[in-house]
Length: 182
View 1 (cartoon, rainbow, N blue to C red):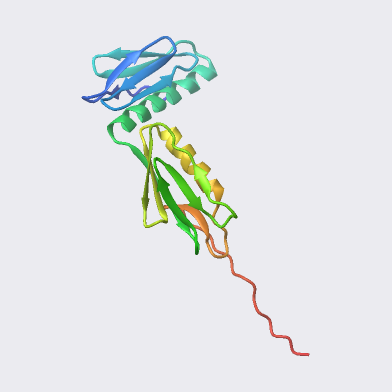
View 2: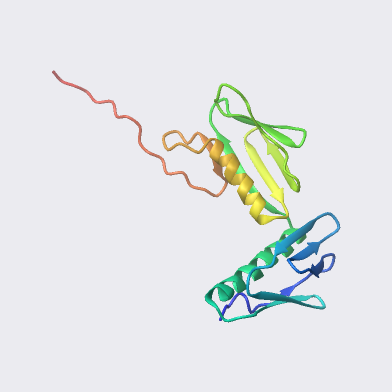
């Protein structure tokens, strides 16, 4: 019995929910998110309460029950308050600039790296080294943050590169200068 799947989701004011044959569509004034239906799970909308039930008692259907509820809850929370990931860029000469809605990243390569705009995602740049990625879809915000971080991962000696604001980079000691007595 899923502990997560049993809990109903309260849909707040300003958000409308609609169930189609293939997805749950959640909308607020600005955005619309679609959560695809998973095998063996049936959503029920009663007033402002969205709940889920298992159609058959297979292992996959029981697994999808909690997953479906979590995906729908993430969509509701994202429409209420946007998700945000913060990336910090460290390194001499490394910087992030915003051009239109996209980004230009100077990461020590022979050319600047351009990152195109993604619908539903907002980039905020502070001090040329702090990048905030905001959006209603938790999965897309995390995916974009991971893609940008992968362009220049933090290296363990000086910590140069992108890292999340809450990430701890384990540092290694550099070369030891040895004295040779011949």
